[in-house]
Length: 418
Length: 100
Ligand SMILES: Cc1cc2nc3c(=O)[nH]c(=O)nc-3n(C[C@H](O)[C@H](O)[C@H](O)COP(=O)(O)OP(=O)(O)OC[C@H]3O[C@@H](n4cnc5c(N)ncnc54)[C@H](O)[C@@H]3O)c2cc1C
Ligand SMILES: [Zn+2]
Image 1 (cartoon, protein in one colour):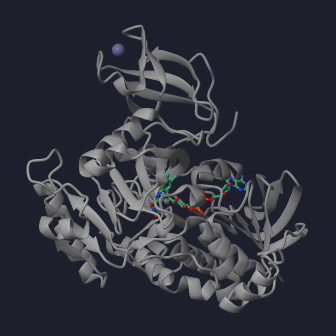
Image 2 (tube, chains in turn green, purple; image 1 turned 180 degrees about the vertical axis):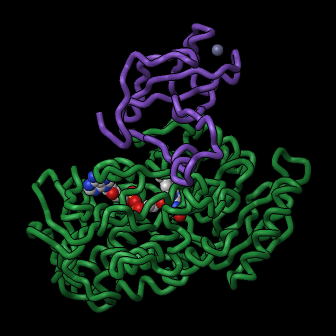
């Protein structure tokens, strides 16, 4: 046990010893020879899954196996936009479960995930954009999800720096507005779940790569790693861009392709943007972090790739769009740019599913927009693994939909990478 | 930015002259009506997505506007060859999800 909860008092106490004696946030255990459940992938989704397995289902003999460091994948590379305004019922309910969990997450984990409900705007630049926005907002409201369609005057009031003048290159005709949406601190989400899972007895095993999935008579029996074999009765695979690689280890194929997705941050500025602004049509999305840097996301590279970097013309295009929308940002200098590997599905929805291998489960395909779903994804996946049947909210996201044809087409709501 | 050689134009050009066409050498079932749901789903949606050598289609969109094939390493992004439609690759690809 790492012991000790974070509080105003602990901050004061540790200040007296120059913050040199803070307890470690989690242990670094040697792997046991076997576990009830192994989760492959120590990103937000994998850590949340382990936490809810322990917390909701009392399954604590669990290991999370991560080839790098916790949160070093897409969790630590994303632009942290959180919202639940998806079009179709199945997706809307799943993302809304996540949003509800976000609302209490810092309290529940005793870790400040810096969830900030600063609102999310999706801009409409054409008549068709506005029709799609109206349809989506109406669908959201029928599902009990907050949302409004607002006109250019209201958009301008919310975002004074946005160029809403008529006749500009990308005229702003209006937007959808989800006030409960916002951002959170990406690393803190991984760390918060990691610390809480560790406290419940979950072993977090870093710097250990899964290299094989051992099966006997159609049942999973454990995983091969570069530190040797580790047995398990159940294995949950949550490795985002590497899902296809892990699936192949179990002799399976997925309807997933891995693409580079890029983002960048600027030098820190004074507060100038207090909401999240996204535009499907020009493909850019932007917010300002608490540190002051502008956080800007680009589109995916259309080719498949695992190189964790993307092509220059993709970021160039995004910067052009951002400068058109926010002329005042044209002289801001960019500090850093990077790429992550996203696992895209044909219908822009995730796969949360059992597999033909008994005891092996996959949670993947979140593509460009899974950060917002982290708590909900972990919650329903833990339930699915614990009971060996899909959680009711996960049922529609089974891999079978690619055979039955019951796809959940969220390209409209997920059309911009986020 | 990739630099891609179009086998028709015989020129090395920048990536943004081209558009990506997905995995190469996928054959449409000759008689879709006779396919099981599994076969049809596999044809439509399931892809090799290897971590390593991959055969893929590109279209020379701002050039001759023709499709051709490329063999590319999806980790290093090195392009190993490009060849016209209908021809077989000289460099062998990785299996599904496989590394090489
Ligand atoms: C640039 C960018 C911007 C984005 N912006 C947003 C956004 O604004 N909003 C949003 O909702 N989503 C966004 N996303 C998507 C979001 O980041 C992902 O959907 C989400 O973080 C996936 O979480 P995860 O835990 O499943 O994956 P990851 O955090 O990638 O975790 C998977 C882990 O598995 C590990 N792993 C892989 N293979 C193995 C192996 N063989 N053995 C052991 N471990 C292994 C990896 O090292 C990694 O740590 C963005 C993504 C990117 C790249
Ligand atoms: Zn050509």
